[in-house]
Length: 139
Image (cartoon, rainbow, N blue to C red; front, side):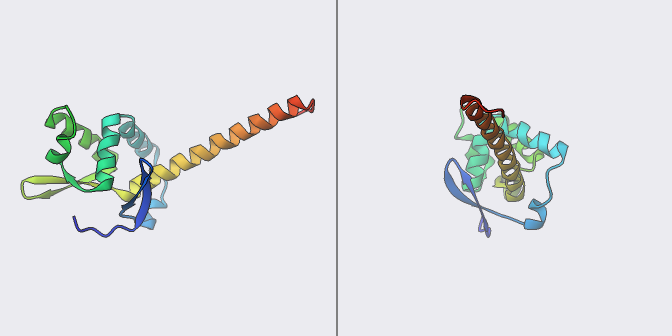
């Protein structure tokens, strides 16, 4: 758990440090990776597990204590996050420690930033059309 962190992201408005490798992050997500990533992020419990893994590495059993669901259900959520490469597990004796996977998280953040820019641009163009209509101009 003494890992070197050198990438900062935001989780629930708080900055967090993640492991980062620019050569991995700069490759965009494939369609299959995109689908797995956003399927994993579509569930509130998985998003919370990921947020906790970003803040600090925890064992599967420690993570399960935060939820009113069974250990098996938490393990299944972690498996979905693993398939999306958002987390990894590392065995330490009898425990499995869950780590956030910074490069994949960074790719997801970059993709969401692109979508945000797209929708901001669209909203600005709609605002321009509306403003032009109010002034009696052709758009």
